Structures are given as C-alpha cells and as structure tokens.
Image (cartoon, rainbow, N blue to C red):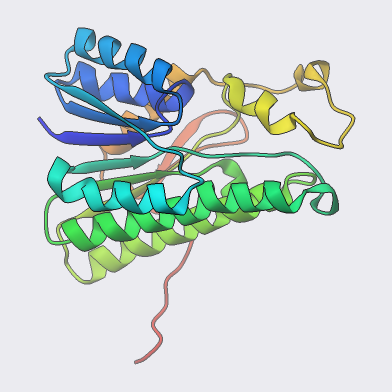
Length: 252
C-alpha cells in the first residue's frame, strides 16, 4: 500500500489513473483546479478501495501554488508521484498568444520540473516512484502544435535523463515516462479552443483515440514493469522500452 499523488486528476486520464491505484488499495492524494470534480472523485476512490483519499485544489499554472504543493510532499508522505496535469493548444507558432505560451510552459514545464525536483530531492535514496506523463508529441514534432510539442520534449528529456541518473548513481528511486497518443477526453477540444486554425470536431473524425481507461491501464503496465518508457505507437499499440534519449557525461 503506497501513498500516491496524481496531478490533473479531476477528470480524464488523471482520474482514471487514480482509480487504478485505488483499486489496488493505495492511498490517494488527487490534485486539480476544479473542486467539485475532486469532491466527486474522492467518493469514487473510496468506493473503489482506497483506504484514504484526499484532494488539493491547486492551479498548476500558478508558481506559488506549485511550490506550496511541493513543500507539502514530506508532510503527505508521498511515495508515488504521477505528474499527469497538462495544458495543450493547437495553433501555428505565430498565432500562439503570449498568454497561451506562458500557460503551456507553466503547467507542462515549470510545474513538472518543480515537482520532479522536489520529489527526487526528497526520495532519491528510497524505493519511491515518479511517473511523468508526456505525449507522443514529446518525441515527434507535429505542425500546428510546435509550442505544445516543445513543452512535452522537455518532459521526455527531463524524465529519461533523471531515470538514467538514478540508475547510474545506484539510487533506489525510479523514474518512468508515459507517452500516450490521442485520448478521448475533453483535452483535445480544449486544445482547439481559441485556435486560429479552421478546425472543427468533424476534422477529428479521422483520429484514432484510446479511452482514458485504456491509457490508465497502459500506465499500470508501465508501473508494474522495469521499463523506463511506455509509449503509444503510430498503430495505437503500447510499447515498453528503455527510452530514446541518450545521456552522455560532461567529464571523463
């Protein structure tokens, strides 16, 4: 039984991952902005088998709130951290507003970096687990979502790099990277909100989607494995691997 924190857990993939851990009898702390959804999820997690379920209302685009959450990790006794929260926007780079760019960087880069650093500082010598959720867009660039892809490249590099550092320095903690493909949640439509691209729901009909529950099952496959990376492939299959980023040494 572990103390597990999941960010971006009010709906979609984050909620589905939290339910997976609850069904295993783990204790949950779920984090998101929407309190009413967190209240409902708390009840579902307890009904699903979690011996305890707490929630924290945190806007991960706010640096002070992120730091406060990081400061709370020791008191909460978190042993497993799932950095799932993300913010996406599909648009050409020149049509991406400064506000949109800042929001993506704040949630996808800064919050993940701060929580990853705080957790690894606290737990690198212990049998703890970090799983950061990136995207297939963290390994490949897609036209009209370059800024989003850039933020997810940060997550894949940070996570794979940390995982290799932990291994090379023989630390007990492990880091893993989950890279889903398109998921049938509100994320995709939210990413098109305010976009200058002439895109509608009809344009998404050719996309293949996994459900949030399917991707949550992929997350648990990764969690139960010795692999560093679990990534959805172009044919929608799920592949466990030792990652794609090579880490060299600055000195001999």
